[in-house]
Image 1 (cartoon, rainbow, N blue to C red):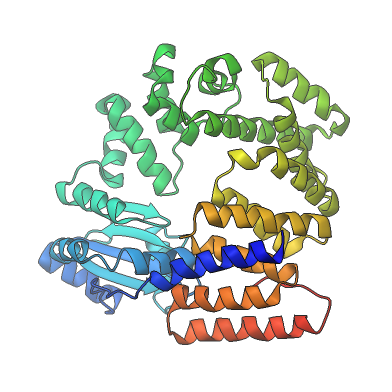
Image 2 (image 1 turned 30 degrees about the vertical axis):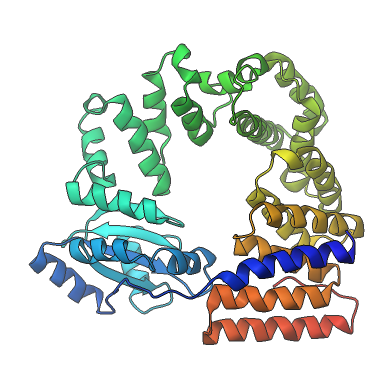
Length: 412
């Protein structure tokens, strides 16, 4: 990519970033001890809404900027729940997280006055997700705890729609959803699998290469007949399941020479037409964890990206390019990553994580002035005028200054 193209995209990103303004945080989270919050929940008969976070958690920062600034949502939550937020580095965090089964940041948890979990959601939440959780907890229907109670009492107590919803609730809570999703699919006939709801469900839950649901997705004549937006997702899902299955088999059997024979037999059985794409995915994973070879991995990654680029989401591209920024020593691949990240950021200019990866790639390729200018804007957007943000930005500039007088590269 030419310098002119880099500066053109750089200017586009700055225009977006400069239009953003800081908004007020309307959520009044309590800073009391956990014991006092539980006591208040008992006396008020209100559930507790807990949000866990850490200073360097990108999703936590995004929630603070996009969710806690919603005044209407804050009023709903203040009326219905006791709001409690704690950092994973706080003194009480370890014991509270253990009691509530919290293993990641951010995690949103609703707890009753006895400390029992009512509902849980792991990861980034939107305003819509927050509203949905509030409805579930306030109505005491379709929560994680209620579903568990009903399912334990007999699978037949839940309708197919409820089974599917329960599977998603478990998935969002980072809990095992396989038994529930399998139970749901047993209620669906083969003719019903082609519905939009079931396509989405198969994309979310199917992982068994021997299942009826996987066979439905894998056979080209089935999903190619569906002229809709899901076909690319189906193709990537099929690749994912096959690659994991083949490479797990190779790890167990050590029959590395049988890679192509095994893969060819699978492609023949399912009549898969996009064979070059599938083979590039399996070979990429093979060089990553069956017989790890970093140089071979990145050479295969370039081949994989060139074949798959039009099918990948911006976040998928960003994940691959971040690894290139962190580990790759092949100039050709690093140069290609600039082009990939330019397109990814153009597809989703609001994603600050993508832009951070773009900064890493620029630094890796020694485009220092562009990287520093963009980083200044991104750190302000992510962290504001906080001590942590200032420290991170100062560290970044120091490392870049060191690199400008050397031949090394970094990732922040």
